[in-house]
Length: 330
Image 1 (cartoon, rainbow, N blue to C red):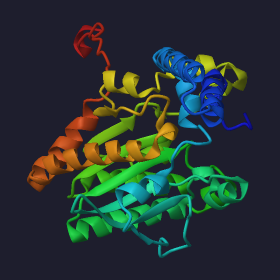
Image 2: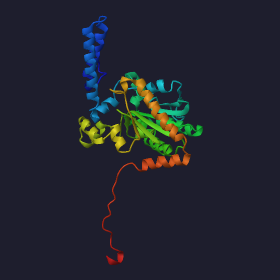
Image 3: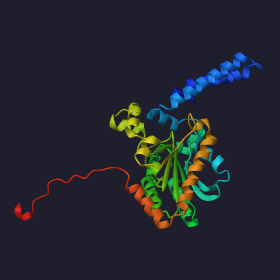
Image 4: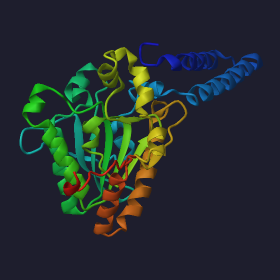
């Protein structure tokens, strides 16, 4: 399987290859082979539905990291072929882990920002595996401010295991860069729609995801920490990542139920990598639909709604204990 298919996908892929082999070898009007092909097609269709309707959270983590999964630039080829990329933070340099620029989506001019991973070793080193440095987040901030200046909506694509934790990144103010983005996005006077397309990890994801509407692809994940990192902290054993994934409730449907996100975008059966173009069209449809709703809102109402959205996240209880006696009665 050359390492590009996940374990639970392999029985499906084997059947699909068997069907392709039969189709290429079938003689014209060979009834027996045609019947065998139809039988196998029914079998593989049932197998797909059985497998992908019962995915565990850990299997969704694997799908979110799938080596064939489309990245931001793959979607932009379909959604925004005229994308104009802008570079640099005007302070230190350009960070290839974040791409940012101008485009249109169904005639709506937008500023688009997204994490970008690499497809092979060389490109992953260039893109730093989608883990941005401070200059990446400051580049994103520069484009956010440009969106406000132009009055254009902001669209972001989230796909990172987290912000880069290296020494150089810390020296250049990684935490400050992320915190600044959180503050600025909270007050940005234009509509913001964010889409988690793969991994949404920690502050590195949130730094471009403080949005009026947060969407997630069906097999993406969004959490405060990776399952491996969570397992290493809680159980001192990164091998318990599967257990951590269950506890984190990091799947799209979990987060919709918890009101952390606003909508789950369905993926083609088998995942986004099975039909990237169809996935891109579904993303575009959802993003444009929400942008059209947001564009009609007055700025103050937009900001009030955004603030309310994030303030109401989470559940907590207040317990009032016995009150201390007045000073004179002690």
